[in-house]
Amino acid sequence: MLALSLGQSAPYVRSRVEAGDPSTQCLYWTVPKITWYQSSAGNPQTRPQASEFDAVRRSFQGWRTIFDQCGNLSLEEGGVVDDRKVGYVVNGDNRNLVLFRTRRCGDTNIVPANDPCWEEESCANEYDCWDNDLGTIAVTLTTYDEKSGIIYDSDIELNSVAFYFTTSDGPLCNPPALTTNCVSTDVQNTMTHEIGHFVGLDHTNAVGSTMNPRAQTGEISKRSIDPGSRDFVCSEAYPKGMASQACVHPTSDANLGRKAQVGCASVGAEAWLPALAGWALLLARRRRGGRS
Ligand SMILES: [Zn+2]
Image 1 (tube, rainbow, N blue to C red):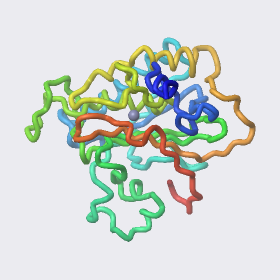
Image 2: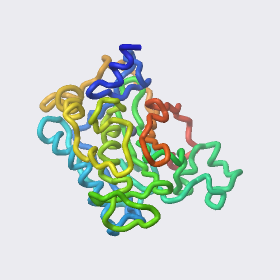
Image 3: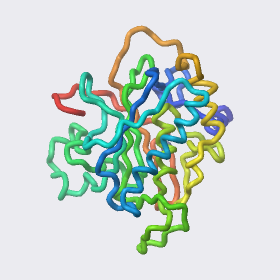
Image 4: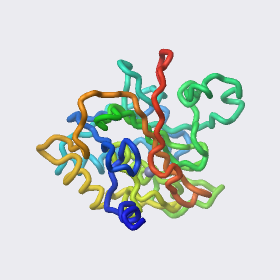
């Protein structure tokens, strides 16, 4: 119990193939350049209009600055694309995508209750809808090799069905009077945290960590990346001038297609909670073609 609690409040916690199991591999990128994209749809609700695009850019820039100083890979913006699909298809047209979902799959006006996509877990992509808990602010969906832990693709979905995403510094919004100059769920605060998952960080309860799973409505402190998360990049996983670092010596046979999904949840729009207790793992299923 003591070890567990110490681990949970460490300055940073690397994501694992099996969450919390140190005998399994850590998740990490090995390519020298990661290119990320934003959906051209943005988040129509955010004011001033289209300010969310720059807020997402500032979030990546925060991490990029660290990688440029003492890391070994570069985070490049690929631009704005019409793609609305998350996940990874072997030999497919994959990209690391950020998008806001503005309608709920569970709404029967959006997805019929008997649609086969429920069984196939493909409704989010087929109907462009939010298919996670309504109390979850955002989800980072990462596809990796379950033997080596090497990440192939990572996508970030934000829940614009239940959360009002803002880009202002404050003061706190007073619903329903949502105006331009107030803060509710800050895009940069949320995205800086999600990009931590994107590069291989799990939650930690360390006070002040960007990867702390809790946040108050109106919080903007996670816009700044804490020293512990910086150490994860520079001193452990991605040291400058060196190869990206595994946690367990990799085995030779790859088994591509495992997926991890981290949901950063909120209760009553007040706090993020580790709703999934780390990573919920889904075994990849054989797809019938098309995108997953
Ligand atoms: Zn999280």
